[in-house]
Length: 90
Image (cartoon, rainbow, N blue to C red; front, top):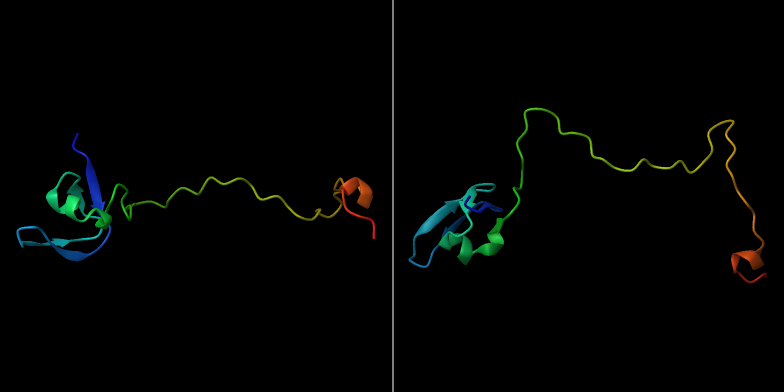
C-alpha cells in the first residue's frame, strides 16, 4: 500500500516547474509526491482532525487520588521526627 501524508496547512505551494497547487488542511497526499518532498514541514503522518459521527470515547487516564479523607474515613499517617525524615532539627 502506498504511504500517505496529510497536509498541515491551507496554502498555495509552488513546485520546481513554477506550477502552483492549492493545499488544503487535512488533505491526503502521496508521501513520495515531489511537492511533499519539497515542503516536508507542511505535511504530517497523522491527520490534523479526525471526523466522527458519534462522541469520542473518554480518555483512559488513571483515577485521581483524593488529597483529603472523606467524612468518617481515617487516613493512615505516620509522623516521623525530623531526624527520621533526614532533616535537621532546628
